[in-house]
Amino acid sequence: MPDDLDRKIIHGLHYGPRVPFRRLAEVIGVSEQTVARRYTALRRSGVLRVVGLSSPDAHGLAQWIARLRCRPAAVGPLADSLARRPDVAYVGIASGGSEINCIIRSPAGSGRDDVLLRQLPKAASVLDMSVVLLLHSFGPERAAGWTGGEGSLTEEQVRQLAAERPDPVGPPLTPTDDDLPLLAALAEDGRASHTHLAEVTGWSKPRVARRMEALESSGSLVFDVDTLPERLGYELNATVWLQVDLSRLHRIGEEISRHDEVAFVGAVSGRHNIMAVVFCKDTPDFYRYLSTRLAQIEGIRGYEISVRVRRLKQAASLIHHGRLIHPALG
Image 1 (spheres, rainbow, N blue to C red):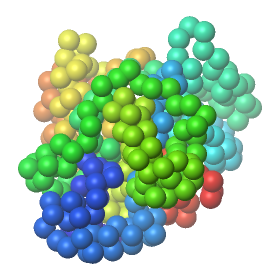
Image 2: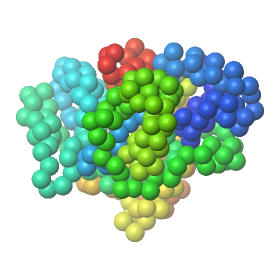
Image 3: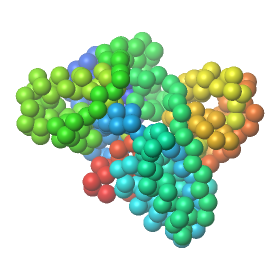
Image 4: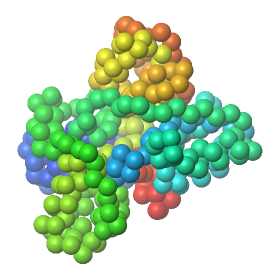
């Protein structure tokens, strides 16, 4: 089980995914060698992956959240198939094993060709399907994922790390064919050195640095930090669907995004207008969160809970035998 120092390193990487180990060590207050050694151990054990991703906005893609109610015998094979598609992210099995939740990225606009969205309802194994559009993601733009509340850095430490990342100025640059080797290498290891990236692209190190800066500052290149909450002691994972007063939508979304238990919260279309992905240690911990912290927020008119029993994919990582791995290895 990772200890408090491991958690501090993970927390720091969420605000500085490519921060040098030397700088992260200075902020935390340990040696550079200690940070490098702990990070390597976390990555090799499959608890942690830092990945660089091409933003869906750079390709004109919308993100659709699909809930598929399936025949029990077909849930596993269909979920595995979806997890291996590059246009599908965050695949999980929920509701006692009868439901698949996933995010499908497809062209935005009235002229879109939602091939997968058109095909899924026709599958014999799918009994029912609902799809909503992700309208807005709440929370700080500089944070790259969930860390939990234990062993966290102080607000000042977070500020120091976040201040070193560029603010996206947009609009996103559309990556070119020349960028594909760079993006592929970053999807495998978001902390790959400029030397390695120069080797795989055939560019000079200054050109690599300039192109990465241009892509990241425009919002085209984003970094995510995938972790396995179960390996950090958080066994219960649920999606909470909320109906809230429209006039309070943004305020409620931002407030929920600051909860330690929440990995992601977004505004969505459909009957519910907010969805939140929550990680808790166990069922009593989840009930405490629902009945105290979430219940104190004014403007929530209704809710639905979908408890995940198995996660197969998050961001750019498959979950295989309790380890985060690159999709190509699955």
